[in-house]
Length: 115
Image 1 (cartoon, helix red, strand yellow):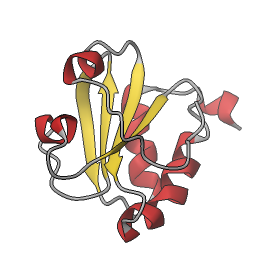
Image 2 (spheres, helix red, strand yellow):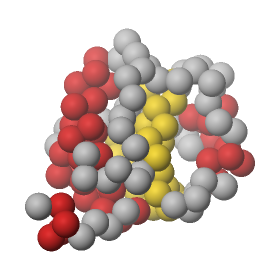
Image 3 (cartoon, rainbow, N blue to C red):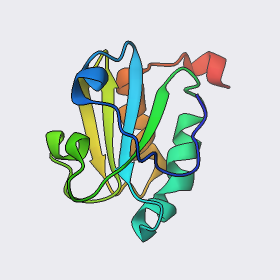
Image 4 (tube, one colour):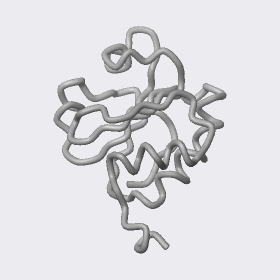
């Protein structure tokens, strides 16, 4: 699934994220965060070979229950889920390789098919 612009203010519940089937990436941040804007092309590039990964961009901040339940402290925070279970986490990713490595943990791709 392609990355979308902007963070959704209507976050799913924690029970809904725990029930997500397959591979999913929860990205916590805000539209005005400089770190979030800088990491957007990095995340998009890493996601490109993983079209089956659900990418949920969730607005975070004071009083946001989903971010608090994942103990998000800095933006962006990327939570990589496999069948609703956290497998990896990256905070303020600066390299495509780091994001790609975490994506491979939840959605292995055939290297030959990716070429």
